[in-house]
Every structure is written in structure tokens, then in C-alpha cells.
Image 1 (cartoon, rainbow, N blue to C red):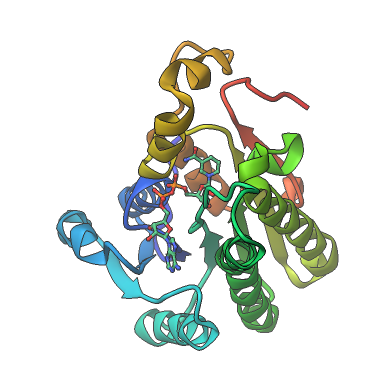
Image 2 (image 1 turned 30 degrees about the vertical axis):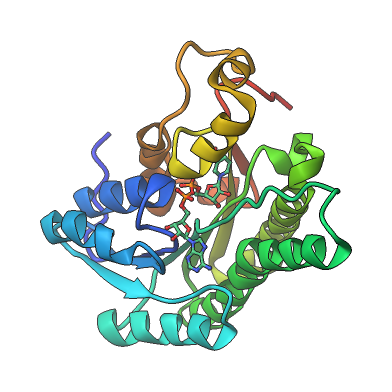
Length: 251
Ligand SMILES: NC(=O)c1ccc[n+]([C@@H]2O[C@H](COP(=O)([O-])OP(=O)(O)OC[C@H]3O[C@@H](n4cnc5c(N)ncnc54)[C@H](O)[C@@H]3O)[C@@H](O)[C@H]2O)c1
């Protein structure tokens, strides 16, 4: 199936590398106009964006709510509309219980801010905007960890992603009559820079033995599915969670 997203404007957060970059590139190839968001590392993204058809970079720190509002405004000003919001940016901080309560709480707060509060604010802005147009798609990138849990060092990460799932389901149930659909993507271990940190800690063998397939998931294995969701053809699956975990957690 050839999907043509010409005329659709999509904001992808955390598109400078990893899963977000693969999503942005695939959307661009499918004809969409892409607002590729980043913060640190945005300069490195310049090289692939230069080769893209219709992608522009937008910088904002997701720990700063004013910057998040500005990001949404800037995208609207630049392209005149937004059709799809993809909350992909995320962090996972190794936060062992041996840390002091202050340090542990700072890790918790930062994780919740980037992984849950920032996407929630972007969802709020998008819902108000999409309601006026009676149309819009929201895709939130959660994690397998929302369902099967994570290691104790990454409890904040799992909790933030669990919140994101509940947020997405609420949008789907509450906003469908206004033409807004919402989906959760739940990747398992995916070979990105974020995952390197986990490999360093637990070893590649541990990660590989966890999955049912022969190869670890790459960002490119996920991106085509997002193109499909952006097409609007999956509207009746609104509220759904789509697992991309190579069979490591089936529920
Ligand atoms: N890689 C995995 O194994 C895996 C597994 C499950 C879920 N996920 C989720 O998929 C998404 C993408 O993961 P990835 O592996 O590509 O991550 P990554 O670390 O490679 O990229 C994360 C992106 O988020 C951006 N970001 C982080 N903090 C930010 C901040 N304060 N302000 C603005 N941008 C910020 C980074 O700049 C980067 O572009 C994340 O939400 C992650 O939780 C990843």
C-alpha cells in the first residue's frame, strides 16, 4: 500500500535521533510536512533535515512549559495548521535507590516532566486546536515498561509511560465525537542511543535473550506503522496500544 501524506502537517518531538528521527524521515518520504522537534543535539539533525523534502527543525526544551507552548505556536505559525501530534521525545534516567532522596526525587521529577507532563501539555494544546477543526490525530510513544514494569532503577520511567497510556486512552474516549483519535505506541527494546545505556548496564546478551524474534528492533521497523496511523486509516482503532517489542511481552 502506497500512503500519500501530502498536505498533512505532523509534529514529531525528539526527532533529532533514534525512533523520532526514523519516524520523521518516513513521514517526509510519504509526503508529509514535518516539524521535527529537538533540543540538545539539534545541530546534528541538521544534516539529515537538509536532505529531507519538507522537514523543518524546531528547538524547545521539554522541561520548560513556556518553551513547549512556544513550540506549538511556532509550528502553527510556520505551517498554518497541525494535523498530527507525535509525542516521541523521552528520557530514561538510571536512578538506583542508593541515591539520596533529593537526588532520587530530582530524577523522578525530570522523568515525569519530559515523559508525561510535556506530552500532556502538547496534547492539551492540540486538543483545543483540533476541536476547532473537528479533526486531528495524536500518537503518544509510551513503552512496554508501562505494562510489564521496568527494573527498580527505572521505576520513574515505567510510571511516566503508564501515565502516558492512561492519558492517551482518555483522549480517545473523550474526543472521538470531535473527530480526534489517539493511539499509543509501545516499543520494547529498540536499538537507539537511549538503549545503548541499557546495553552497557545489562549486556547485549540479556537484551537479545529477552525477545522472541532473531534481531533486535530498529527504529526503521517502527516508522512505517506510524505512517499508516497518520493516514487516518486506523481511526476505528482509536484508544489502541500497538506493541513493537519483538514478542518480548505479549498481553
Ligand atoms: N529505545 C528503546 O529501547 C525504547 C523502548 C521503549 C520506548 N522508547 C521510547 O521511544 C521514544 C524515543 O526513544 P529513543 O530510544 O529514540 O530515544 P533517544 O534518546 O535516542 O532520543 C530521545 C529524543 O528525545 C529528545 N529529548 C530528550 N529530552 C528532551 C528535553 N528535555 N527537551 C527536548 N527534547 C528532549 C532528545 O533530544 C532526542 O531527540 C522515547 O519516548 C522512549 O521512551 C524507547
